Length: 262
Image (tube, rainbow, N blue to C red; front, side):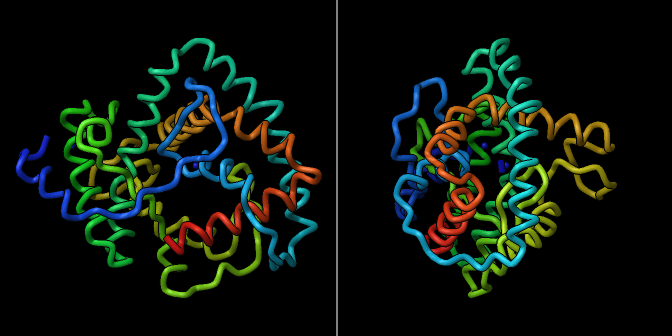
């Protein structure tokens, strides 16, 4: 609920020779205020309408179903009400800027995983996006890299990198508050966290947060802001699901397979 910048103009023009597939947009119509083109979970909701059922290895189904119920209750009775209040106070453009800021911070994760998969043009474009959005985009609050230079984000994480090299997903696993995952993707959270500038441990390089309190505050803001922009999508998925747990499980696993294939 399952989710951080101006280079020389001549360098920007050279990106045209490094074209690659961009991430698909969701297929369902979404109100203008609720658009969130840079987040993968928004695409997950769109992908839900077109996936084909396949057998999922799920030996932890009892635990997973209970955790799905817990996560859904936390969302409905805690996270969603807070996000609705947050949404009522802040205009959508402000919330989109907050989303852009956090997306920009996660550049190291995208850049590194693109390199690890040999997607050098994608990594090059990610570098250009970071330079443009950090400078012209005012520390990532805006996304001129996309609006002016048509440079799309290339979402890659370590779970996709492992999948790219043939590592199987393993059993499905629902994580507390984070939602659907699997053994491969859950393990991959740790190496990805080493590339995140949002942390609570001492590091030799700059991080947005240095203490547990700062980390919790930053992650809370990021997640509440994300929910405020995407709650309609999750509500739609719940309406479409006859049984929420297997529905979310199947959509997640097939969406991750689709990401790895791309």
